[in-house]
Image (cartoon, rainbow, N blue to C red; front, top):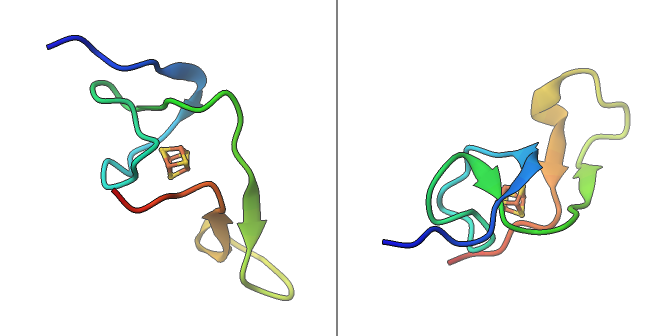
Length: 55
Ligand code: SF4
């Protein structure tokens, strides 16, 4: 199987995302947007990839 595009500057483990590379541990997008759902983020769990798309 041929791998889809992968951006080696964006490592990602969310294989359930439609933007994830078909192989490897990378995002396939050129850029992503990261945001937060907290008013005062204090740990990595407070952040979200806003470019996530359901498969
Ligand atoms: S869009 Fe976000 S969640 Fe989806 S593969 Fe890229 S970095 Fe991961």
